[in-house]
Image 1 (cartoon, rainbow, N blue to C red):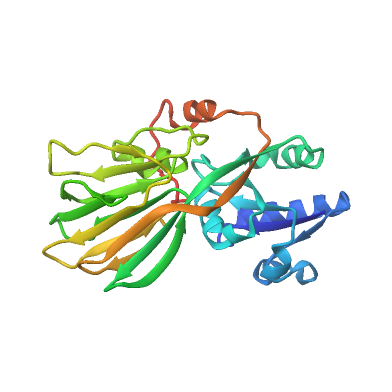
Image 2: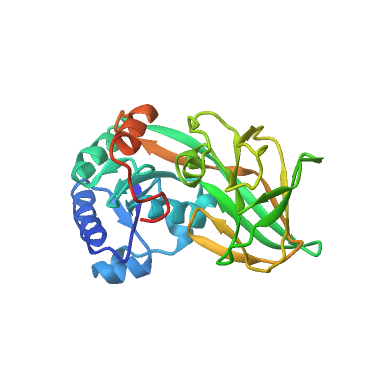
Length: 290
């Protein structure tokens, strides 16, 4: 069995945990592997491999916060590997186990005491003058929003060829069920069980009494066109990657054919996680910021 390890390179705690996990895996007779950059940080170049080799591993272990896992998913979604997240961040809504449970969690994985949960991805295309200039993936959400200017946008929204009323707002969020507990929740969107496949459409500060969040079919295609009196407009993916949009750009969002496979070993259900992570004292942190 081969296990790919991806730690957050800017977190000394993540690198230390990765080093401990490498030693533990080798004692179990399992070969860990990681990128040459990680190999240099851990002084283990003998275990460094290229992407093509790591894509053949049986499991990816991500050591960091939710943001680290989101980043890994966007870079390596095409690998289709099961991903186990070990939380070293602040919120840990997407990561499966805490650092203190790393070895016990890995023991359960090696014994086959785990399940794999599939999460839907969004495919995001940006059309500019009829040409595709971006082709992206998102696990949490896609956001079209104004930048630093206070002036709002006017967004044209088309669902499967049917146009909604133009939306005057600071922006719009298109989220997956996984992303329903992230930015969409902060903007007033519903919480959705990740086992349910839907698309969420949540306006950001709409200047309208009629605008409400919408839940639409995962088979639908959304087309968002951007109109404004200024050119400070952003497309943001999972709260981590931003790209400037031009006036009259069209953003096409649909369900991706690929899916994310998250390893579940803790036995903690979705609603338990909601209570533990979002109940009680409000958090200052959103997914994508760790």
